[in-house]
Length: 148
Length: 92
Image (cartoon, rainbow over all chains, first blue to last red; front, side):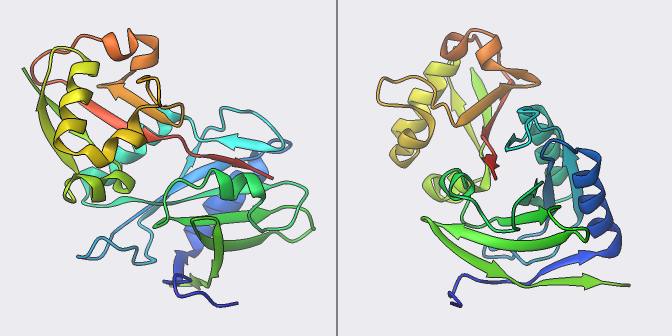
């Protein structure tokens, strides 16, 4: 079902895509995570644009859960602020399951404005999907790869 | 003494859309009291029912997590910066 908050399209450069997927493989057997930085619209809404895909430490060091290291989040917040951007989303890997938000992902989703990117490493080819999560509702958003 | 509090995007709607707020107080607890008095909508996001720091929130005084300092009793100096960060977590 298409929900009205299933927007905007997430636009990643090839380099950002490689950073995200590479980070997910590097973290195996544990889940990996990172933050997406980018500009907001004048009205404070996500634009779908990403200025940086920033790998973070998973302090859980777990194959089934992740928690972004708050020190990495603080650094990301400062980096974003320095160039007039914001943290606009987070990615994490699902090492053995589909690229769809788990009940834990939904319950712990902090910001309805964020993009929640999930990379599944279950199959031989990685699958990257993006979602918005608001009040327990999940909406998949399109992902476009800018091949520059 | 004036302290700057940086708010994550999630909380700005409860603070008139501001990314940072200047508040007076000698401790983190004092500053939070003043902050939620000015913006009551922030209370539930920062503090639990017992008045302790919410477990899903991290607060840094400059580069230090206040949980590893003195929590809400952490003393502040003029010009300190408090950063409020939501805990970002999930799992398969």
